[in-house]
Length: 209
Image (cartoon, rainbow, N blue to C red; front, side, top):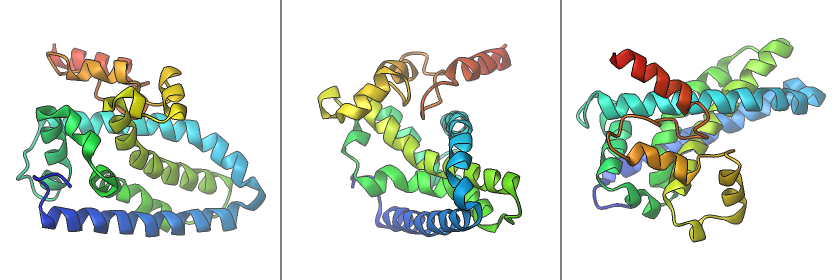
């Protein structure tokens, strides 16, 4: 745990992870019981769309936390904005974070998708597909900060399978994310895979004109 992480923040992260695990488990059980033999096709259809949406979501949240609010903003200030602001002060510090500090904020941010997934009536293929997408988006949000962390780690410390995925741009590559930490620090916000950064960069550039 970093020196700046308070006991209250730590308890919040534990709680977010616990609630995330319970809701994700419940959603997965509901989906498996309803979809049955269609579970695999549904997951295969939902996975690429969910990973794309997760990349977009990570970019929007990252941009908003960098540009708006402060650590004193109610609800999200200490939980979500603070880690982004501290990260820009010391980008490599996150490589020393443990599981709880790495994933607590991501679990909190993913809870709306899991709540929707847990409450969604399951009454057909499209409903199952939507629930699978919501569940996979939540899991993708959990994976996002880990992909971000790998992009900052020394390559020798990154697992071989992840280095392969980075080379093939299946997850966020270090060379791609490095552009976000290069002046003027106003692009490449998407950090799950980075696939949508060209589009998001273009939108931001147009909005600034």
